[in-house]
Length: 388
Image (cartoon, rainbow, N blue to C red):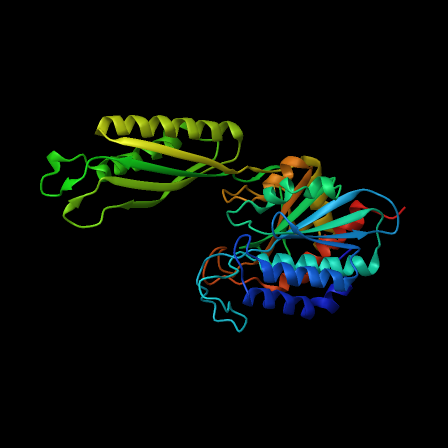
């Protein structure tokens, strides 16, 4: 089953939806306009049930097939990023400092296109739950929807997600069983010394020097404590201290992230970081408090479901265009929360080799992916929920 002809017919319409969403980006849970557009479109398609406000601002649509069967969930994310767009496109963001730099506008448009087709054809037995999620970008919107009863209320038995991927040819797909994307933990380290005059450092206890030593020492955790065959990243991304060039400040603050691909490595990174921070602080005579937040889990694909979605993608584009063993990425995804609750799989869809990186001010979703993405969703449903 190649690209569904109906999606060739709908391509311009779905592209217009996508570009409208791109012009009006919204952040985290504050996706009132986007959620409203999604809900109204689902209603116009004749979707059987449309529910808003799941997980604060998520939208769910229920499409019932021609007979009884299983219930599966298809998920897209709706939120944008706090980035000043510099694409120069006619449909560029109209809100300064906000932009769809990760392609969630494309994800939403493609799932809407699939929902329109599925509501028209109903060529399946069972139920499809289309899930439009807020706050993927750091807000754990997937978790919020789960806590609000998403999976139990709608009886979702399996769940599937898709993300566009720059650097891959348009319409190519990539997946793997097991860990696909990393966990994402947040850390904050507050170092407190004793402030004073910069010309008399011996009468102070400099938190900047101590914090700098913590940054350097923390890097040894990956290089000397982590198994070289296991993936781990520790990045200190913020260092705030001081107010003038002649004052040694009282405090310094560090922030950063830790990424791993399994729970054992995740435990080790947190434990060793605590030891390093305490030890370096003692050596420099300062106090250092580590605040460590376990945020997004590892995105782990069920092995059987990874094989299934790969076979679905192969129906759409052919086996030569589907990578079944893609190398994991240390980026993170809150779809991981859904995969911890239900079997399923997350797949990457190529958006073009020349497209700017995700989370970049020059990024723009490539609309050429739309027929491929919509066809993937439709084929997945009709394969997972075949008519008797």
